[in-house]
Image (tube, rainbow, N blue to C red; front, side, top):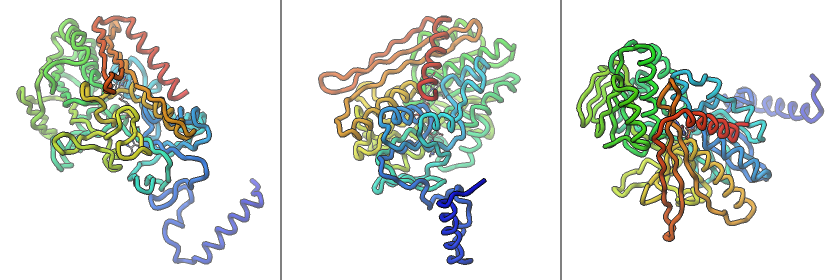
Length: 447
Ligand SMILES: Cc1cc2nc3c(=O)[nH]c(=O)nc-3n(C[C@H](O)[C@H](O)[C@H](O)COP(=O)(O)OP(=O)(O)OC[C@H]3O[C@@H](n4cnc5c(N)ncnc54)[C@H](O)[C@@H]3O)c2cc1C
């Protein structure tokens, strides 16, 4: 390997600086240069505008790619803690091997290189909005625009206060598998090791990530029991008074396909959870379980809180979700910070929250990339609304699905309105549509 003169001089300058500093050099200067520290600069800021994207899920992947297409003059940096992308959409189907792991997991580095944005695997620790600086485990970087696409956290505090031991035990033993990480693998293992007995699933209060997906999961767990002749019963403890959305379709599946395998309990608000003795107490009664999918209430991800994006509700308490301007999707008090996907707070007095879905996060990614590109070009953004479409597999053989679609319009008062269309008629055609949908979305985010 040969060194050119510029590299040689840079190396020599570094070496003499170290010699001058002598033995008193701080520990960080002894580190190899690519081992970052939160106190160091991660990427020096150049002359071009920089957009930092926090989170590489459905929203983050979309906005990063679209920004490169729509604002090629900008530098785009995506910060994500996980080494690979794992899709929560279709992960219920993966639990019963309808798709394999390679269908859901994708390489961040290859995608980011293809589209010319930078991917840095790190944990985002803090956001200083006053100085427009993000602090990560690998170093700090400044932004012109920030897009927070960090998804959700589990509000275990609602169940356990500050008892971290109970929260950790719940997560480890009875994972909800609602955020993209190792919990999904633990759930799949638990399902395939289950020998029989009571399998409990609780549904948190709205708003929650992907409202129909716990019912889909219940159907597929029940299908697995039925197909493999496991003497198990799934009890769904629903916080809500009824199944929603696609209530008619799910109810028909529970009664017609899984009468001996699913018990649906409405108005079951969780009062106590004991992960050590496998007990759950709800307003509809108490249960002991052999295994459970325990889902604490959902909120915007930790970093949305740390960045000061979470608003207050009518009761003066934190709303749990980012306080965005409903149509522009930037924070009400900071137009340099956009929030997209599941972390977004209420956008309408009528339906309140957009469905917390990958489809909406992807749609938000397109919309916000367009807004930032237009602002960088000195234009007033042309306002747009997302849409939503979700397919839910309710039968493993024959494969049959139901679906729900949401459309949005703005009324004369400037309020966003929602139209919901449930397709309750389970059929094979919707399974094909689901895979077509997934193919298009993966291509849009990753190809
Ligand atoms: C079982 C299940 C089934 C689903 N099915 C569907 C479906 O069929 N259709 C559909 O449209 N939606 C579905 N969803 C919902 C969908 O997964 C979410 O709505 C979507 O992922 C939201 O996108 P997001 O970008 O907001 O968050 P995410 O996709 O969760 O991405 C957030 C990313 O931010 C990263 N992150 C968070 N904090 C930090 C930090 N401090 N530092 C670094 N990185 C950070 C996380 O690691 C994560 O990768 C389903 C969800 C589940 C759980």
